[in-house]
Image (cartoon, rainbow, N blue to C red):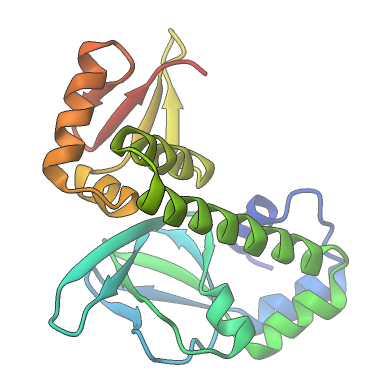
Length: 221
């Protein structure tokens, strides 16, 4: 099996051992495709025909309203999976997946997905845990949108991005670089961009974060 595919599986399923026969089968069954910037991987209302893994680049997950308004809810970097809920359930996707930049995806179609579940011990348990984690995060964000203050919503949005692996590096003092945009934070927190900008400015004055180009520096945990 390709090294980049092995790295994708290892990152998403740490500790799971893939037997040689399953590796060989996945090497044959998993298709690697390239999407140019702006290409739509799948759209709302369409059945998702595969489970996808980002090998390089990034996928933007967004909702599109009937009047064409777009609300970005997540960015999926390498080496994360996406499209699981719609693919596993057979229910059409509720969101749109678009390549933010030139992106390479591992496409796990029905046969590859069956191989993962049937021939690799521990994969089903790991996928269920991931679904439960994402569902819990979605419920917390929904609760925050209805009952929490603006700063609590922003804090939850930052926590979600951290759990999604968006902290890319740590400096010598322990500050962590979180890649994000104010538009993304606003969408995740259910706030306006102006409110997010005001909160970020206030938190920066308090020394609780440091804004930067394309993201934020978060203090040591």
